[in-house]
Image (cartoon, rainbow, N blue to C red):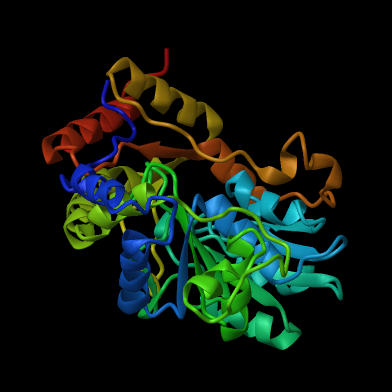
Length: 378
């Protein structure tokens, strides 16, 4: 079976983990954590970076930082992972789901303004497949209505909007280093802070609500409980693993883009023939090759394609179910029909994409996809 994903090891992970263990400092915020923070801040211009144990934790920190209270409203797409919503639901927020766009699963920025009420506190755009949302439109609304913008950049490392790194545009941003992402640490994430007013408090929230980080820098003579918080920081072992990955970021990205382009060019005739649709990347966005997906014309064709690939030992998978129709939140949704969201939930298929996938295998997968659309249905 050709798997959907396979974690890639650069070769330095165990060496750096051994260094971290030998240092006697493995509980977090040691040498490798600092190296990771410096890399992201210098390469992408984030004002402050804080590694977290997951992207979920980074989102939860963001919800605390903007002081989400019961009854506050947060606008986000329905076509996203549950963590995007959960982070704010945990603080008592009401989630107002927006539909995706017709061209790609990102939030339809043209629909956002109609959803804003006096209780709206934040907009959470999700850069699906690492492709940028229309951030100029979103930031203009945020400025007009004095809202916070938290970028869910879980899939968006090393991707850009009009030359600006994703995660550097909103007030806050959350990244993932889960094993399915471009660069990984098994589990792991990062909060990027682009607004100075959140920097000091973010450190406190991440350290169980204490000013422990200030204490270790010698800024205070003792530390104590000064705010709400939790244990959001990862161990040095996770940071050491991640640093081995980010040292090879450019190399990893080049290979993933080569695989992505091979898929695109081989499957483009099927789009031309109207059999399926390929990923659409707007002029303002770049492609970080996080994912290659196709959108079938209906649920039946999607199911048939996945089954056809499975019968040929290829693991292809669908993605999110619409959050507004989920068992947990359906009763809280306002009843609007989100047509595009539902279409992606029914029709989108993700194809295998990982560093060690040979180009020849991608070409073979494409041949099987072509066969699926010429063979009569049983």
